[in-house]
Length: 137
Image (cartoon, rainbow, N blue to C red; front, top):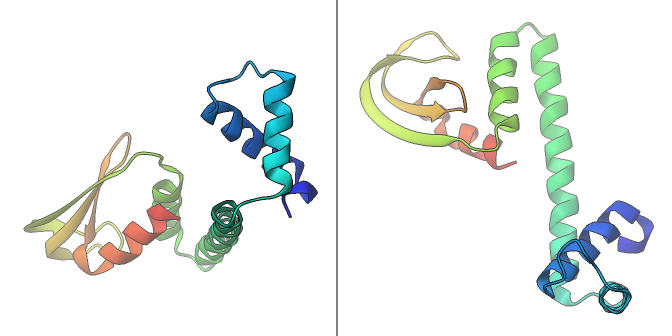
């Protein structure tokens, strides 16, 4: 499986070399050890590879769904979802105070505040699991 995808193989080799303390400067011997380990992946490595494939599929399906949401006239919701997905660092706070949900435009008393890199967005707390899952993907 890993040999069919050269990008995954290169990433695994890089991780192995880094784990051996070689960093970006790799010796031929360390490279050979890394390739040997890739030829016979451990159950943990095989599980990790399977998880990465499933995560990539989930991310692609999520992005396709967001595109469909945008095409159906819900650009504001899709835009916020895209920002959450693309933001590498988000801070989430659950608060009980009055505010306006960015998705529905309604006043809410229980909210999730999503602190993106450049702004804070308030979302109704009933969407908290969705927002947290969206960011995790």
